[in-house]
Image (cartoon, rainbow, N blue to C red):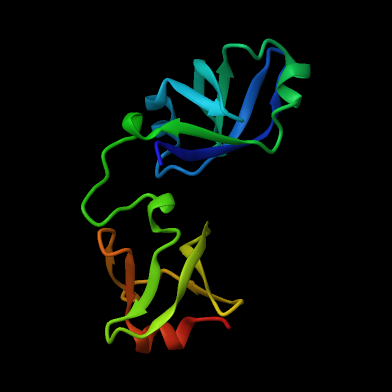
Length: 166
């Protein structure tokens, strides 16, 4: 995938078309690195950027001149080009790269396929097997290895069994 979901429009801010955005990046300031963002497949150049005291990002985008225009973007996802994304540190991965991986134990037991990851106090992974969902937090020690080339997320079975919600 060439684009990453980097945020979601919460609401318009003010009368000049600014958008209040909840970011999905490690740091709200990372959004500024993109320069151009995409909403519903349309590109928008970032004209103004600021981080609020609440951690939300406020974006002014070319082509969104006023509050009425901004209102149409409420609830929409914001994407950025992967090439513009900040470099990841060792052991960090983009959520989009983990979704779809086979979740397995170190012994090779298939637990399911990663369907979703929610950003809360710790990431909450949702895996699915035979139509049933299993949720587990990505707390220390549960994820042993992420192998993107083999399309596998390897977990420690004993910790997984303690924390998983079936």
